[in-house]
Amino acid sequence: MRYLRIFVAGCAILAASGCSKSNPLMGKWKLAPNSGNECFQLGSIQFGDKTMTMVTPLAPITMPVTYSRDGDNYMVTASSGQAFEFQVESGGIKAVSPECHLVPDN
Image (cartoon, rainbow, N blue to C red; front, side, top):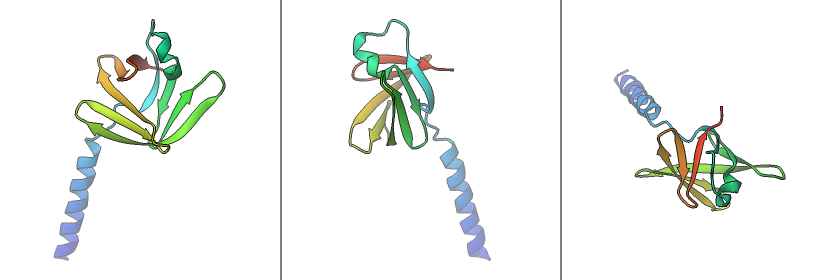
């Protein structure tokens, strides 16, 4: 019985610590007004738990991704190995390269 209580307590701690690590990229984003031409491929993006959807002129592209964090940077890595780097800023997010500002797409 003692081990069961320790196990339950450990699970509760893990569950509580997991709740504090939310991903600020989750949701729908669109380019901020007056964005440069180099940002057109980031026109509209939706981040899900395990996918990223980019709306292109031809059709939306959805790809499986994983998320990680390196300091202030949030890394989004597609299963193909392509990586995207973002930073959280006031009122939205910023793609690091090319530097493109995105705002929530409500």
